[in-house]
Amino acid sequence: PKGADRKQKTDREKMEKKTTQEKEKYQPSYETTILTECSPWPDVPYQMNNAPSPSYNSSPNSFNLGDGNSSPTHQVELLPPSNDHLLPSASIQDAQQWLHRNRFSPFCRLFSSFSGA
Image (cartoon, rainbow, N blue to C red; front, side, top):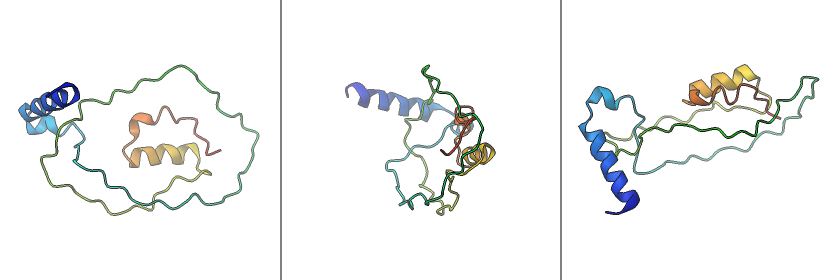
């Protein structure tokens, strides 16, 4: 094996050596990605307010994605479709709660000034 294949193999071997308790710390990976169709954004008129808009920060951000290249060791569990949509009119608190509910907690600080506009 070369390059990425070799790395994938060594990562898989590392995960196989870990205990079940250690493996639970990682999000499982799957052979396929199941995509679901989304409905289009609703046409909601934007309400302009006098609150200052968040400033743009041009400094690069880095995110640690961890070691998530292991193969699944269990059957893929399909979750029922959720009607939990984040609308452009959502408040900052709504956005934070949505991020937590949908397992995007690491991005809460990044979206701490979210406005749907």
